Image 1 (spheres, rainbow, N blue to C red):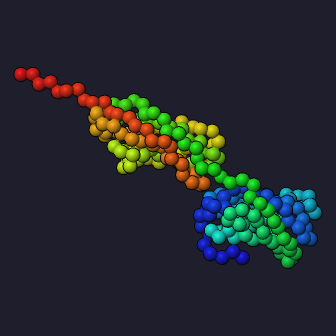
Image 2: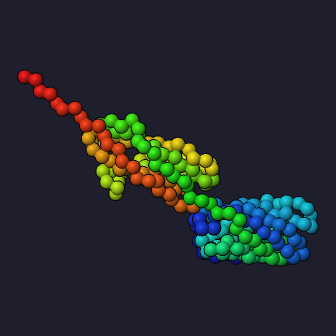
Length: 212
């Protein structure tokens, strides 16, 4: 069976489909998340039934799964092509082969930095949009006096949808009459995307008038 640590295997995330053959034959399919958890089903041409299947993939692409039919599936997934090669075994030692392909991979979030709003002498609201592209995403804004930034807002969830959603964060404690750079950053299981760099300027404080 697979050896090594079963750990984050984001490069194997995606959806898979294939066939199996031997004394029984049929089709199988499922999806794997960024942590290497595999969930799907097996449909037998012999019994005409569909059996839930779940398993795990390690960081080398080795997987082991079990279906409610009693079969255990194990094999390897190619890191680059996503091709699946393996075997299936029943408790009575009936066995056969299985093959498959990765049909889709998760996409990184799509991120757009939008203009700051509500700018005062000491703060502003930073804005943008995040499309999680179907994988749970988090976002935050980086900001600072240069494009090297230096500060960031709290990381917050952007959901797992497939449409752009508006996001924002309020920042305070800024110096008056100062230009600040900022950009939006979002991460999901497929990776991180950075929005473009924008600039806003805080309002200058009015001059202090001393009366005597």
